[in-house]
Image (cartoon, rainbow, N blue to C red; front, top):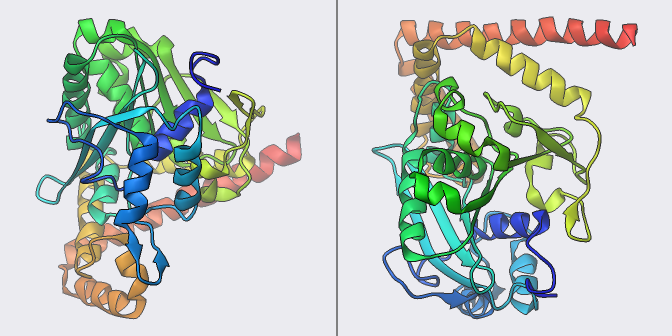
Length: 359
């Protein structure tokens, strides 16, 4: 069923946001190119590009990606959608990981999908920087990207993203110019982290707040990190714990996601603990702790989480050596911060037990 028969819905949002994780460099025209490519053709080129002698090897973040893209290319609803404006940037000096893609869903409806955190270590570092920085580089980049795409197009715009991508979608909509704001129909935040307090209090956020649709799985951790100041819909997931962050685990029905009433007790516990822990640290303490941990991880020479996973013993040795070489003041900061987290966890666990007994 194409978009002329069934309007854009939350499931479409999830599909387009998952699409943003694919490595489409050299396949989808970039942000400076005004051309576009249909999804079915992009999938055909993608499969040829990553074909090797021993079969088909996909350059993907998630194990379900190969099956997903082939179904997408063969779909009547999505196969003829046009992809354009692809951008993929990793800048270690600026601590920025940013990627986005734009989709023309039908004759005049556009969806901008911001990629969430990929497997790069610098991407995870940028996420953690949100805890003490008012604006991270990817957020500023997201505003520029939205304004460029808006200048190239006309008609209604939908914006969305998963994980950090959801955060970027809201930020871009909040701080773009007024003319573009009026074109934005809905903003989709799929289990994305919140914001620094200054963003929540901004006039731009207030203007678009009623168009934000926040979705979190029942055991959400990432999606309840930092401040949101907006309602969220809880989605049923087939996974457990942190694995519910994976969009492939979200249950769907006809034209909608499967809703449930409340998040799990474990989600409440983890998020209450993290919020209390962060409240006890000022911005400088957060920065110093994150920089110290990043310094230790960076000593492995790995660029991605997978690199560390593939060389566990070597990575562990290098991290231990790096830790031993840092000064005593930094070591003291690390342990003091970690012990504070344990104290918050212990206090909230006692509170959790007490609450359950009183129910």
